[in-house]
Amino acid sequence: MRTSAGGLIMGTSNGTEGGRFEAHSHRPTFLELFFDLVFVFALTRISARAFEDLALETGGAEFQRAVPGAARSFLLLLALYAVWQGTAWTTSRYNPYQPAIQVIVLIAMVGSMVMGVAIPRAFTTGGLAFTFAYVTVQISRPLILFLVLRHRPQRFLKLRMLVCFTCTAPLWFVGAYVDRPFTAVLWSIALIIEYSAARFGWPVPGMGRSPSSRWDIAGAHLAERYQQFFLISLGETILVAGFAYSAIGFQPGPTVAFAVALATSMLLWRIYFHRAGQVLAEAVAVSRQPARIGQSAAESHLVMVAGVVATAIGYELVIAHPSGPAPASWIVVVVGGPVLFVLGRARFEHDVFGRVSRARIVTLLALALPVPVLLTSPALASAITVLVILLGAAVADALRSRGVPPEAAAPPF
Image (cartoon, rainbow, N blue to C red; front, side, top):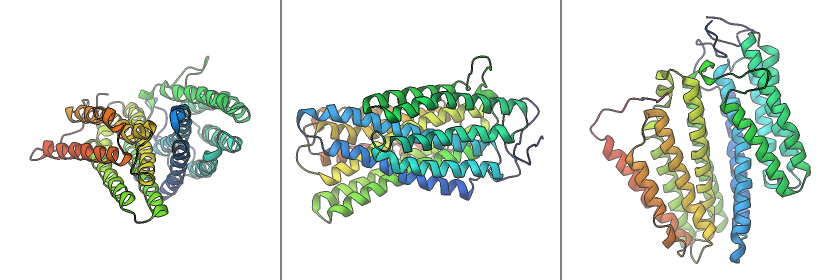
């Protein structure tokens, strides 16, 4: 066992890059849970922003506003997720009780709060605040670690990360000053570079890269962090539905829509945790490449969280306008959110078990087939249809596992 930098690192001498003390608990710290609370707020701001784009649509021009609006909201979600993920990986690779790591978490928490506040006007007057907060968080993390780490491979990795975020920073700042269409283009390029760099080991010309097989992480800690982030997104759906319903009052249509929203959130929770969501930590533990399964799970959770956020937007639309004809873009959100969730859940199942059950494929087909009919139906009909299909998926999961031993994790990595 090797330690350095005042107990910051845990690892072996086999050349892995990063780690933490095994003596410390794998459970997330209270500071990390405090950090997560900011994301409940930030996700509600994304939902509110997308709801404004959709709720104001009329006539045949709805998709001209809906598609760019949805793309911009997804762009902001990617930025938020990048901040959360970078912080979660840091506390899973290094001792989260060390002052340097706690400073990183605090900077990320403040930056995420500023980003959340700026989200509604991120492509107009709030662009500079959003950019400054994001860039500060992403640059400060590798910079602090580069200064406090002593092991050369670890410092070299942080240096490559620092180079990457420094190179994309001008794209963020220029994007904050130009007109809205160009803002989205520049920020998209920056995020593509950053996500690709993380996926391929932060390659920098002349400095090499660090494949994930060399990363040493506390798998149980990281697994629990992803589970918690999914619960955060579910909590956001409850908040959105509750706010939307309380603003309208106890009317029959909104009341039914609110009940459908709550039931749908419960089913999303049930489907997630049965059974892949329960054994993610086990899958990481038995994998020969725990960092690689962590990377794959990160991508799967991004898809699931995007689906849950879209589902929350659908709740708000249905509660506000349960009856009468609904624009096609509303139905796409109401049905498309659960479709995204199931797609991410299927990929997550492959991460944990190395296969995808037929129930996921059947659920996707069942959600897609009624869409042509739902496009001419009230929004509440779409929400009820989704609820029934997800209920069938949850019941199928329960019946399939009834009376048989729990399936053990068997990751493909």
